[in-house]
Length: 235
Image 1: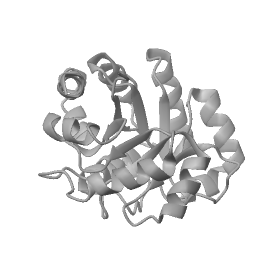
Image 2: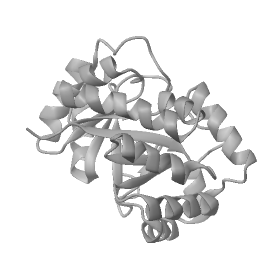
Image 3: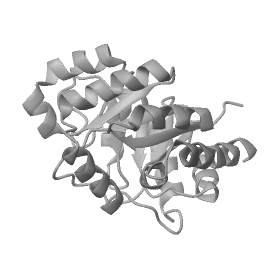
């Protein structure tokens, strides 16, 4: 049986390479590195605060790529920058794709770029519960590695329970995506939620709660990620 994949999201900052290493030591299979944006549509209060802090630390796109390169020196798992169209418009789309991979990125996520737009930029595609089957099929065809299921409508952030619509959405995505692995994110924070979501998907993405715990340092993050890893492996 293929192990469920555990993706941990961290906001880019001076301390992120050490945090990425701690996450991997805890059992993360992949680390997303958020590039801060001043007006992120999908981000809840935790990620917004982290982005504001990162911007205050000078984390613009080039600085984030430097953080990515430093993280790559510490870990061997896939590293995936998560960024926004406006940042890439300013930096240059083709230039970003080249520089991200040169810095050690496995692929990229552009949170607000729909499937079908800029197909020349290979990236992980996102779909939401509101996505049509046709849109999911297109995203699955174009995605780079796996399909990212945004499990809820609204912003990121911890929630008390898994969305009641996830099972239906995951089944619909599975049918449309066929052989493409599906990972689910948004609203997953506890080991119990991780286990529940992983029963429906091939992997999970944990963002807001990981960012919160990361503020306590690498040791706390390693322990938290370890609790998620055990939940997935024991499930």
